[in-house]
Structures are given as C-alpha cells and as structure tokens.
Image 1 (tube, rainbow, N blue to C red):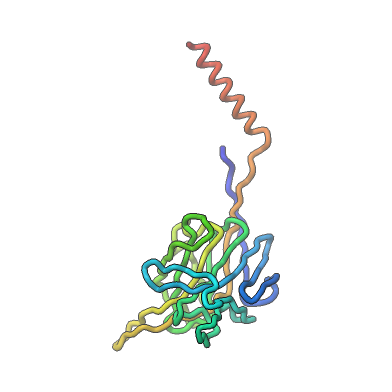
Image 2 (cartoon, rainbow, N blue to C red):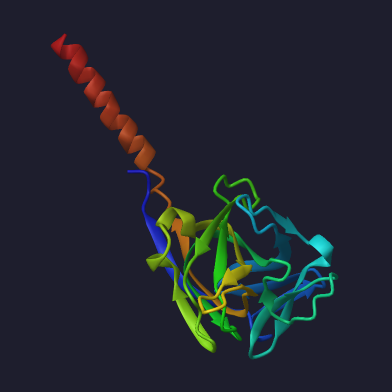
Amino acid sequence: MCGATGAHATTISTYNYTDYVSGTSSSQTYEDDGVTMKVTAGLYDDDAAATVTEGKYNARPVLYPSYGTGVSHDQNDGEHTVDGYFPEVLILAFDTTVKLTDLVFNYANSYAKFDFFVDSNNDGSLDQRVLIDSDLDSGYDSVSLSSLLSMDLLTGKLFGVGASYTYKYCNHCSLHKSEWKLKKVKFDEVSEVPLPAALPLFLAGIAGFGFASRKKKA
C-alpha cells in the first residue's frame, strides 16, 4: 500500500572520457542513464575506526584512460593506483539512491584486496568499514558485491572503496600494500513508484466505512 520499488541496472565506467561529464582537480563527475556519480578521494586510518578524511593531503581521483581510476596526493605518492601505503579511498557519491551490485577492478597487484565503506546513518559521511577478505585477480576482476555484503549495506547514496596494507601468506610473511584501479561501478537505480493520486481518498473512504460500521453495531 505504500508504493512499489523499481530498479534499473546501470554501469558507469571510470576508465574513459565517454561517461566523464565534468570535474576539477579534486573530483570527477560521471553521468549515465540519468544517474550522476561524483568521485572524490581521501585517506583513512587503517585501524578499527578507519576514519575517512576526504581530500586529506590533497587526495584526488586520477582517471587513466582504458585502465581505471586511481588516487594521487601530496605525501610522496608515486603510485598511480589506489594503494595502501597511505590507505587511500575512492568516495562514490550518487545523486539518487542506488543498490551497488558489482565493482570491476584493473591493474591489481599480487596482494590486492579492498575495503568497503558505507554511510550507515545516511548523514553524508562514511562511518562504517567492511573488510573484504577476498583476493583480486592480477588483471581484470569483477566482484559481485551481493555475494559478499547484505542488501542494507549496498543500498544508499554514499560509498567508499579503499586499499590498505594486507598480509600475504608465505614462508616469511610481512605486510604488503594492496593496490588496484577501479574500472567500473555497476548498480541498480532504486526508485519509489508513486501511488495513484486517488489512492489516499480511496483509503480514507474505506476507513470511513469501517468507522460507520462499528458505530452502527454499538
């Protein structure tokens, strides 16, 4: 009675200028099928809180045609990927509610994993990190998020995808930084199907009949 939910599958490619609408040194803006996704970048503390600071050390997304999007900043960052030396994160802000379905990574190294961030309070800030203990392929890897995370974590307007240090199991284990580029973001656009204009009056009429019936019995 409160309306039905509709969904429309969409893919935004973060590796070419076809979907790229506008941007500054601190952000990129993509638009596809009526949905706008703004990409910014930040750094986060690789601890339990994993606090994300957007734009820290002038962190910014960098688009590499045919490869994907990485992060650059002013702290001697010689890499062109999202990497974990200074734990970096791409921040994805949508102009409408979406349900993320897949992420496609490229240029991943041998130690590549990713952290996933959500805005659990819907207050416009990333406040929850989910550690994804899944190795990425060294070349081109599509990750089905729905098989890893619950629906409530995948539905919203603000998300983050980051890289930190990770352990590589070997004879002499040590910390290695994860690194990759984000190539595509796949999602379903979630929209509320509006109720017919006459439905509220119809419901009010039914309520009135019920009230009259109870009054008559009394």
